[in-house]
Image (cartoon, rainbow over all chains, first blue to last red; front, side, top):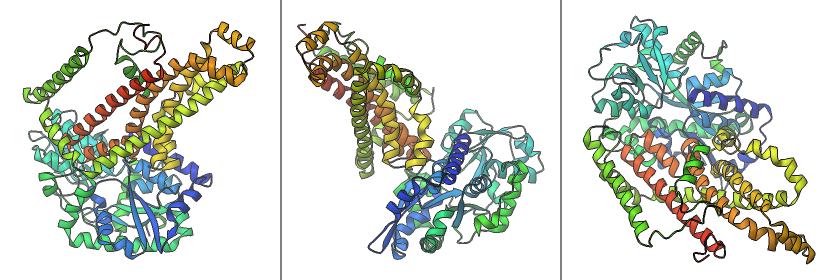
Length: 324
Length: 284
């Protein structure tokens, strides 16, 4: 269902972009108008661990220093963020790279401006993982063949990288059955036996592990130990009209990413300000890495995996145009 | 989602508060006994919620006992974010309802008093009315992003029809004799609306407003939950993605209590506005 919503959103975003963005002029100028040397910038994000550097950077004043009055708009998924950015409701957005590639192949005018988040590269202790019940017969990624695996969005970064894990373990990835389900419902579904395995992000993964689940695959780290998972992006329109603003945002964001990488404990603590994660889960959840540079080689790998799975509708994403 | 929510809303307060038509039921269940019985039902629910996770029928991880929900709720009440969210939700609800009621009233009275207009719009209204407001979510997101206007679009769309349809029904119910009498006394167009149509339609209007009030709340929460507009629904979504199960239930309880409050308020307003009407006048 999420995929369909996403698809619809992407389609609508395309329509709006094609129609010349009826509302965008007012939206962008309202919220991006400068007052007293600072520009208000709205960033569409998902309230998850990955965007901690943004909040941390805001707290540390990295954005104000660059004349940006940052305002986070939390949406429940990329489905609301991509159209929001294209129509000018948000100046920037946060999205996983596969969704950006899909959007690009559908003609949505967006461009990535700064890195967002990457895997920590640790197989078995990555930010996402395929978990099974304690007593499950599944011991490795190869055993996922013929089993039901939950992913948060079908035809996206989750199933693509899980297939790669299975492939690398010597299994037939086409025989894995994927089921769509929000992350937060996965621990319960796994526990109740509705699915045999679940590809989870944080904090669901830590919660499931706390209930005894075992991690049998780390798709991101296994796809590429430096896999760039998500980036911040903007509309090509804003990029043309306000290149300075984009530069300032990129600079402030880069500083924030560096700071978060150097101060993981502060980053972890920052989570309490915009999520309701607390207690042992907060202490134990796995942090991703926040490199400042996008890893193009890993994206090429991801794109070719996506092509193999046919998620771009037979087209080829133009990675250079999108990410560099 | 909207239609089912609407039906449950209309059927819940069975007997005591259906529209003016069904209001001839004797209401004399005893002044103090009725609220007591209601509280007993609530207490029973709390007991079930407390016992169920301990019985092993459901896992306490996913349905925490009532005591834990209460504790989570207690902690929530101390948070600024909670009160801001509550304010956002009430703003979305109140504004949406006000716009819907005003628009529904004006449109209803205009359409209802011009037979041609009524004939022309009837099929359009019947076509637009059943479109669930949630189906407009992608449009709302596209036009207004995640701010209040998205919420208003959904809320106004859903509640407008509730009011409009009732107003239209009300304007049709005008007694022809009263109408003719008003005409022979040379009451003008405005006078007839004010002294003939309005009193006839008011009970219907009030029913519409009461329904709209609940529907508006349902849609406000839905919009926040799905789109991510600030408010209680969004807090629920954040708690959900954070795996904070007791907080999710605590917030859900708050929305439930809001629903009860809205319903009580709407009934109070109705009673005041219709104090002269036989359905409200006890000795009628």
